[in-house]
Structure formats: structure tokens, C-alpha cells
Image 1 (tube, helix red, strand yellow):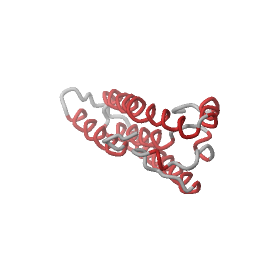
Image 2 (cartoon, rainbow, N blue to C red):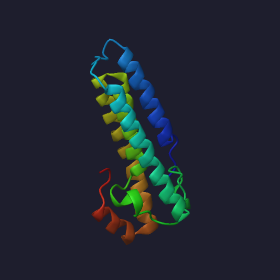
Image 3 (cartoon, rainbow, N blue to C red):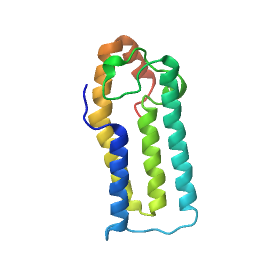
Length: 150
């Protein structure tokens, strides 16, 4: 599996588009108290979820590189991987949700939905196929126990 655009770049690109949308005539603005604080909490939660996912890979001494899964040596199923098969992508999504709160533009929910669709179709599904080839029944059983996102 060789993808050309790393997930972090997709998140940064989505965040930039969200900023442009929020500043455009279509970027309906909502000014409510504590939106920035709520956004900061989502961003912090997203960073923590990503860090926990990376930490679990480090514990297993396997690759964190989503662009080449042939280097994967062990299946992560502990830590945050007990609750979601994709904590790093979930974390990136939470960061974007926090960013949307900071931008005060609910229209950006469309950008977040697009990010989730892109990650699912262009990143997660190809990863799942590669992991199924690598780990077979062990991965299949894991998929039965743990959901793709949450």
C-alpha cells in the first residue's frame, strides 16, 4: 500500500480549507461564549489520543508509518486500540473539531465530514486490506471486537 499524501498533510490541508471557509461569505459565524475554550479541549484531547496511539506502536516496536505497512511487525490491540482501530485518525479528527470551534463557523462540519470520508476511503480501507493480508485471522477477530472509528 503506497499512498502519496500522509494523513497529517490531509489534516493540515483540511484545516486550511476550514479557515478559508470560515473567512468566506459562506462561513456563517456563530459567536457563543467559551467556543475557544471548548475548541482547545478538543485539540488537547486529539493530541493525547494521537500520542497514545503512537506510544502503543512504540511499545510494540512496530512502524507508525501509514504509507508502508509492509514494515508492520505486530498488531496493536491494546491501549487506545481497545476502543478504536484508528486512534491516530480519530485524534486528527478531534483536532479538526477543536479548530472548527476556534473558527466559530459551524459550516466547517462539512469539511470535517469530508476529512473522515477521505481518511476512511483512501487511508483506512487500504490499510485494513493490507493488515488482513499481514495478520489474517488475528486481524479479522480484532475487527469483530473493535470498531473502525469509535
